Image (cartoon, helix red, strand yellow):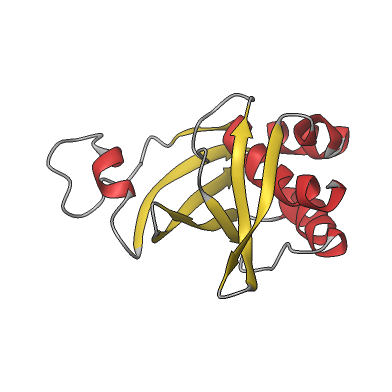
Length: 150
């Protein structure tokens, strides 16, 4: 269980300390500005870009993953009897970018199936310029992109 909770802490961190970018893209095909919910379920679509302040991110990383682990419940998701990703069962923290039922596949194109993989992503977050969470929502692949700014 510790392994599964560690894995989702990165996604929870993103949801907790991000806000809409002043340059948030309107996804192609959106009928109205800010209608991200409609397009969030579109296959292979980048939903949007959010901003994380580096100072806030560093503060959360310094506190450790435990703060977020206590707010997230996940379980392993399988497809054809093979591990597929981590299904979010509940999240009690701030922000709602990652939703109940989402299956987290990768963070920054890295697997986070094992604790050491998660910790490598966690420890490198504050040094990056972007964070990308690849997930499946409602059976359709999507990507959440976070720009890290000073």
